[in-house]
Length: 240
Image (cartoon, rainbow, N blue to C red):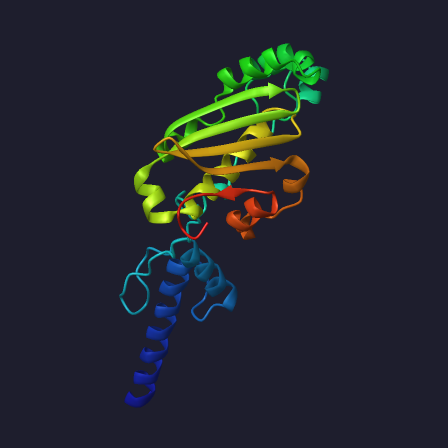
């Protein structure tokens, strides 16, 4: 055998050894099929924090967090309390909505017959218990509510001077509509009257019928125009 043939034989033997080493390390012959590459790609996708081929860290993408806008005068009326279904409360001893706490439902169940019969004493008790206007105290210097009869609730508030000075009728209408929605959600009356006072002077008087609010998309409602459609009167000195 010539020297050249011996060299070729040695090179061939060396290549075979490299292939054997590759087979031991990777579980297959060198130049394995794309199935292994696909598996490796899937694993890399499931560990995005591992370094990529160019040495840079591949960071996971953050999901965008949807947050509700902060409540203020400009959107105060868009949200309201959940409506109490007094008919269901009368019919069922335990909550059937999957949301109401059992103890609170028991209270609804106990009061439902009187509420549905229009007992204004029961109305007054429910208003004290539920305090539907409690989350509006930061927007007024005083808030009261009453049930003059079985078909009507009334809410009254004393204006905060800073809100009234800055927002005028926008503030009054926003408060009026939110008060009406919360009271209508609490008790099965036909209408809610809302009055507002500033320094002892009446600055808003409006009655919201339940039917007038039934099919409104409050996300796109102008509370001032709605109040006027409901016969509302504003007396703020701004061209009234």
